[in-house]
Every structure is written in structure tokens, then in C-alpha cells.
Image (tube, rainbow, N blue to C red):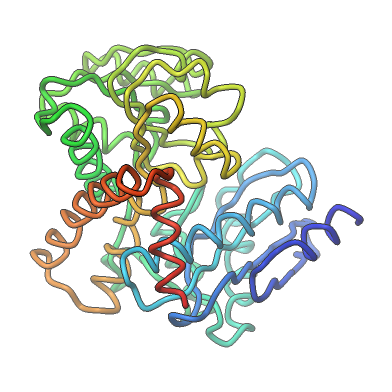
Length: 349
């Protein structure tokens, strides 16, 4: 209980709502970091955590990242995130999953629009259809249900533009056929990114904790490395597309890349890690900027009613935003994370 109290007292967000599913003991946290730009929105993460404090901490950090992300791309929403903290590592399926998602949807609805849900780790567009049965505050349902569908492909497109921008900044050319990119995590976004990189004739290295995914990559002709070896593998660009916190005081000294540009949220374990990367001369594309393609896909198509052509223009703009952040950081002698946060916080007022 003490840990939870410490988290609550140290957070600069606006609201936290908690719900317990009596049938399973599953705890649900909805963290609203900011509503300055509009009602909060963000993904719904479903996973097992060692403690409730770990689940709440994850939700808080992710909600803050969403505030920065929306502000970075000047989108009319505040940052929020939901965590469905499962009591056991097994992910529910079938009727049990459906019942849990409906329970979660009713929880979202009870907040009256303070927060709108979208997909995240271990949730999908199909899950949003189920959640929509008990709440209207939901994004990225399947196209069949009138939503924008899966955000992963366009998140990957935005990351690809960001990778090109980083390569243009570091190497003087965005020609990916000259580069080796290591993608850490070959799931929804990472898998799509690998396909895009291969289409761009980049040399791709894949890493994942799932042996089946690695086997699938090898069948495509992609070189693979063990997940534990990914960060220390030599490459031009490291693209973290799995869990957060992978860039820290222990891993940064072992990095063998010139740039980092990936889709994972909260890649830096602490703000000081951005300075560690800078001191090593490794260009870092802030995650909350480069991975904004998902919110552009969902919010742009469903809420702002962009055409596909308009969405493509905004996705390409992610590359320009990343490049301008790299230039600003160099000009001001600060980390790219500090530069990007400065821009976002100024827009949050």
C-alpha cells in the first residue's frame, strides 16, 4: 500500500480511476494525465504485473507519454492510458475474455467521456468492438464495425519515416538500402516495420522473445538474433518495438548502433538516459513523436475524418518532426528527449 501511496503523491497527472472485477480479481486502472487539449484518450494494455503498484506505475508513465504524443502532433486530446492487470500470466480467451472486456467497457462508460479507449499491448480492434458494446468512448474498432481498424500498420509507416529522417541526419542520406536496421520485437508494429524495411531494401535483423516469430522471420530471409543479444548487436539503427525501459544505465554502454528509432513506448528508463545516449553520440528519435502514427490513424480517420491521402501526408510529417527535433537538440546542446518534451510542454501550456 505504501508503494501505491508514493506513486500517487509523486504523479503530476489529473486523475486515476480503479475498478476491480469481482469474478477474477482483475484490477483495472485508468490513468488520465492531462485534459488540457481535450478529453483523454489512449490505449488499453492487458497483461500480468507482479504487483498492483507495477501496473499503476506503467499506466501513469504511458498516460504521460500520451499527453506528450498528442501535444507533439497537435492533436485535440489529452493523454490517458488504461491497464487491465491480469491476476495470472495467461491471457484470457473466448467467453472469459469477452466478459472481461465488457466489464472494462462499462468501467470506461462510467467516467462519462473523461477517457476513450483504444488498442494497445494484447488488445486489438476486434476487442474494441466488444468494448463498444458497453461504452461509446472507444476508438479503432474494426472497419466492419465502423472503426478505423488496426493501428499497427500506420504506426509502422510513421516509424519508417522517422528512421529515414534519423538516417538523413546521421549519415547524410535516407537511402535505407545502405543501412542495417535491427528491429527488437516482431509483433504488431515491429512485424509490419520489418516488411516495410525489406521493401526499402534495408538489411534487417530481427529479435523477439517468441521462437515462432523468429522462425517466421528466418523463413523470410531475415537474419535473427536472440532477444537477450539484440541491444548489443552491431547495426546502424536500433528500432525498439517491444517493451519500454530498454535504454538504461546498464544497456546504453553496450549499444553498437549510431541511432535509435523505434515504436516502443517509454524506451528510456529515466530521463537521464537521454543524456547518456547523447554523450555516446547516438541519435535518439523520441518515442512519443516517432510512434504517433497510431493516433493519427485512429483519431484522424474516425474523429477528424481525414482521407487516406491526408493521413499519408501527416504520417510523412512524423519524419520531418523527428528531423527538426534532432536539429534543435544539436543547436541548443540538449538531448533530443529534452528538445521534444520542451515543444510538447509548451503546447500543453
